[in-house]
Image (tube, rainbow, N blue to C red; front, side, top):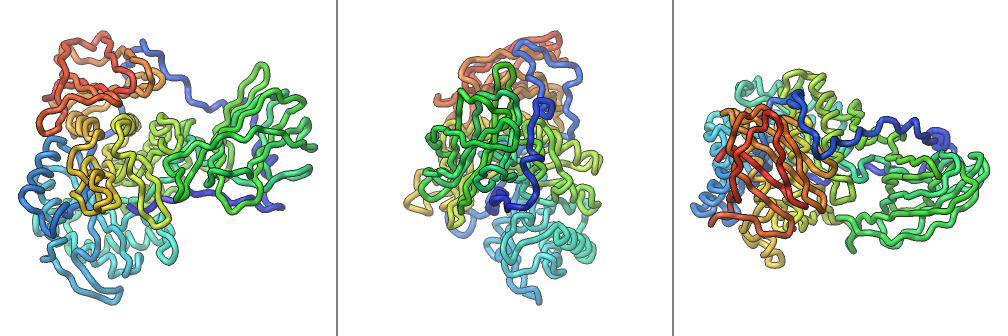
Length: 616
C-alpha cells in the first residue's frame, strides 16, 4: 500500500480565477443536501434490496511468514485456523517483484523456487483450494518502466506460472495504485491505458487463461472520494484587503454567526483571517478568537493535520463573509462553513467549488476524472477495482461513505453493466511520517471495531460487490495495521506485533463470516447515527447488522420477509470485553426467535455493534 497524499491547493495567485464571484453561496444552492434519515421506528420498505452481486468482505494478506524465511507449521496452522473462522469472501495477496524476478527493462531472470515466491504461492493456493477469489498484482516496479512491454511480460509469466501450479488469482490488477506514484514514477491515465493494453497482449502471448484470471483495475487510490470533513475543499487564498477577489466568500443577508472548520499543518497556525462586507465590495476585518487546535490522526510532533474550529457571533451589518489565508508554506484545508442570521441557517460543505469534486455529504461523485470510472469505461478490464479509505480519523463524519460510494457504484455500473465492483483495499486512512512509515496505533484501540463495522455496512449498502480490509496481519515492523501482528521484529513495538487478536477482529470476522458470498443485501431505513444492514443468506437464512455510533441505545424496527426465524446474537461494545471462546473467536450472547415479515424491533446498545444471524 503506497502512501496516499491528499490533494491540496496552494494559495490562489492574484489575477487568476475570480473565486469571490464563483463561491457566493445561497440557501437555494445548498438544496441538494441528503434527506434526513428515517426515524428510529420506521420499517424497512419492500424495495430496500441493494443492486449488487455480493462476493463478500475480506482482507489484504502479507503472504510472507511472520517468523523465518518459510512458513513453519505453527504459524501456518494459526493463520489457517483464524481465516477459516472468518470465511472471507475475497482476499488480496500482492507480489513484490524481487520475490520471483530480477533485472531491468532489457531483460532479467525468473526464480520460481525462491522461498519468498513459494510462500506467496502457498497462500494463494490455499485460498484457491477453498474457493475464495483472490485479487493480486504487483507492489511496485522500482527497476522497471511501467509502460514497457517487458513489465507486462513479467506479470504474464508470473500469472501463467501461478495458474500451472493451481494458484490462479481471480483478478489481476497490474501495478498497485499507479495514480499516486510520484517523482520519476509519476504516471498518467494514458500510461495506465498503455500498460493495461500491454498486459492484455502479454496474457495472450503467454497463454494465460483469462477465464481463470481476468485483468482488472485500475487499482487506484480514490482519495478524491475519501476526504475529511466530507469534502475536498482544500482551498487556500492570500489574505484579502479591500478589492481582493481571491478569498472564499459566502452570502447570507444579515448574517450574525458562523462556524468554520479549517485544517492546518501546524499547532500554532495564525494565517486564517475573516472579513465581512455589506455589499461585496468594501470589506472590514472581523476579529475572531483564535481556537484551540485539535490534533487529528496526523496531528503530532512529526508533522500532520490539526483542526481549527472558528466561531463568531454578534456580527452586524454583514451580507457577505470572506475567509482568507495569509501566504504560507503550510497547507490549509477549509472543511466546512456554517453561518446563520436570525431566521436562516446555511450549512456549506463547499460543494459549489469547481476546483473540487462535489460534496461527499450530498451523495454525489464527480467521477469523470477518476481513473476508476475511466477504466471501467475502457473495455480493458473484466472487473472494476479501486481503494477507498475512510477519513473518520481526520474528522470526517462517519456517515459520508455510503452516499458517495453509492453514487460512484451507480456510475460504474452504468459504464460497465455486469462488471464486478470491488474495493481491493479499504479501512481507516493512517497518518504517514516523513520517512514514509505510518502510524497504525488506531488499529489497537477499542473504537476500531465500531469504525470498521460502520464502514463495512456502508460499503455493502452502497452496492459494491466486495471489499478487502487493510490488513490481516501486518506488513512490516512499522506497519502493524492488521487484526493481529507478525511476531516481534522490532523490540520497540513488541506489543503492537503480538499475535494476540486485536479488538477489530471481533466485528470484522463476524461480518466476513455472516455476510457470505451470494447473499442478497438489503438497506433498511436507518436512525440518525446508526447503520443498519440486512442480508438474506444463500441458504435462506438471515443476518442483521446494526452499528450504533451514538451514546444511547437505539431501537430499529425492521420489516423483511423472514418468516419465523431463530437468530444468534453477537455484541461488541466499545470499552467492554466481548464474549469469545478459547481461540478469541466471537461467541454468541443469546438467541432471538422472531418474525420480521410484519415488522420487528431490534435494539443495539450505545457505541456498539450487534450482529443477529441464523447461521452458526
